[in-house]
Length: 102
Image (cartoon, rainbow, N blue to C red; front, side):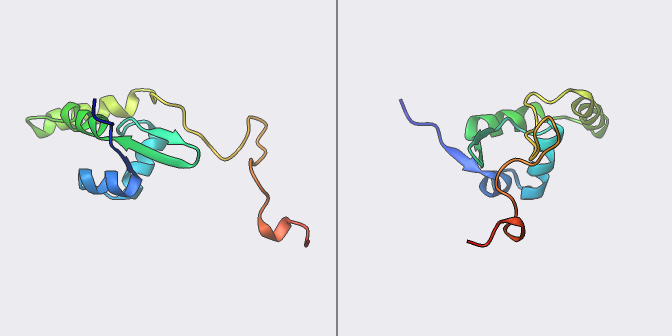
């Protein structure tokens, strides 16, 4: 069995012929390919990227518009992970300007 290959956002975007910011936006809206988050690192598997391309295949611009509308109204398959907790407080370390001088 061959190990599965994973690409980080810049390499996945290059593979798809897109900008990395496009994939980042799609992650927030839930309209892009499936991804995994390993700590702070986001990775995409090659089979998931290929599957995303396959389901995005259309034969006319009207089909593309319908697909785009469908993807925009479909709830995200993975919840977006924000930098705040449910109470609205920021997670992680405070900015250096707020840390006590040590």
